[in-house]
Image (cartoon, rainbow, N blue to C red):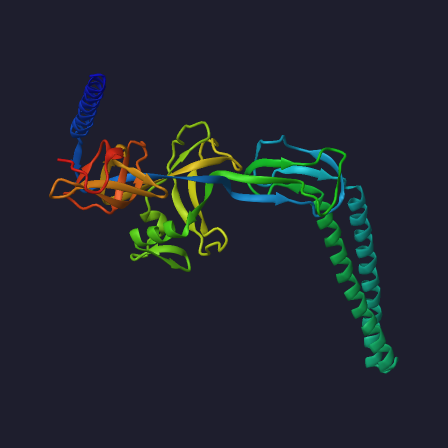
Length: 378
C-alpha cells in the first residue's frame, strides 16, 4: 500500500512537470510566431551625398622674406598679423657701412674718369704726332692701350658703385606682395644674417584649401565627370577646366559654421603618393572679408550625386565585421541574407545601398537580429 502510494505521487509529479513543460514550449512557439516583420520595397533613386574631407588652408600666394645684406635691425614698420601692401617698408637694416661703401665707390669712379680723360688726351696727342713721324708707332700704341685700360677702369668703378648702391637699397626691406604678416622673428636691435627668416607673408585675397583624395576616389571622380589630364591640368572632353564641371564645394569651419562663399576645385595633383595612396588637391575660395586666414584648418564639404541607389533604414542592416548584410524576402516568404555595398547617409538614419540589391526587392527593416536564412517572414 505504501509502495503504491509513492508510485502514484511520482506519476502525478511527472504529469504536472510534463504539462508545465508543454505549456512552456507552446508559449515559446507562440512568441516566435507573434514576431511581425516590417518590410520595404526597394526603388532606385538619386541622392546627393556629402563627403567630408579635412583640409588645410593656405593663402593663394605665400612668401618668406630673407635679408639680402647682414646688419642690425634699426626699424620694424609693421605690427604682427596686420595687412601690408606690396612695396611697403617692413624693416630697415643699419645703413652706415653701405652708405660709406657708396661714397667710396663714387670717389673711385670719379678718379677713374679723371684718369681716363688724361689717357685720352695723351693718346690723341701721340696719334697726331705719330702721323707727322714725331713719335714712334710704339709710343702711339702704348698711349692707346693706356686709354683703353682707363676706359675699362671706369666701367669697373661704375659696376662697383652699382653694387654698393644696390646693397644700400637692400637695407630697406619691402613687402614683395600685398598680404598678412604671418611670422616675425626680429625686433629692433637684433642682428639679421643672410640665412635668417625675417618674416613670412600670405596673400589671403583668395584661400586655397589643400586636401588629400584617395586613389579610388580620384578614379571615380575622373570617370564620373569624364575628366582627363592635360598640360594645363585636368580638362573635360570639351576642353573646359575641371573646376568648371565639378560641383562647387562648401567649407565648414572649426566653430561649426559654414563659410558663406562656395569654392571650386582648381588643381588635382598628377602624382599619387605611393605610401599613402592619396593625391594632393586644391580648392580655391574667395576671401573678400578676410575671414579665412592661412594656417587654419577646416572641413571641405564635397557634394556627390549618387544615381540608382536604394535608401534603406539603418535598422535593416546587420554588421558582419567590415561588411553589411540585409535580408530580403524570397518568393516563398522566407528570408535571404545578402552582402551589400552601402554607405551611411549624412543624417545617420539610413544606408544608401550601391550594389547587392535589385529594384523591387522586399527588404526586412526591423527585427533583423532574429533572422537567419530560411526564417519565415510572411
